[in-house]
Length: 98
Image 1 (cartoon, rainbow, N blue to C red):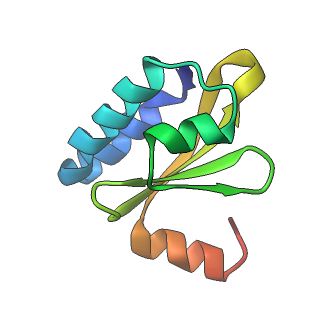
Image 2 (cartoon, rainbow, N blue to C red):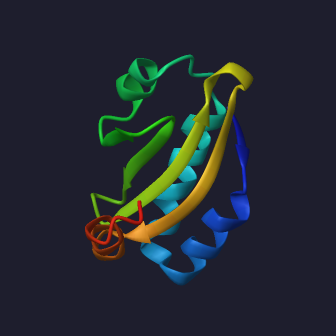
Image 3 (cartoon, one colour):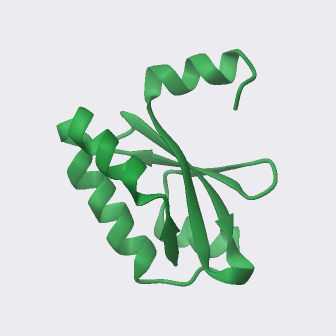
């Protein structure tokens, strides 16, 4: 998959150094495949949730962080929307913002 907006991954990894390694692993796994559907994603990433239309949320770093993406299966692309701490993610969900 082609990853769009990698700068968000780097910025978050810099702000949260313990997230940098797991984000790089996610990036390597994502680049090495071209997923055709959510089932294929789930077979590689067990800690993943599918919310709404093509919004995919990955658990990163032992469930400490959430990587929110938009999967574009047809074009082999994944857009990084944002990365949050688990606490930030839960707060945004409670407010109905995700």
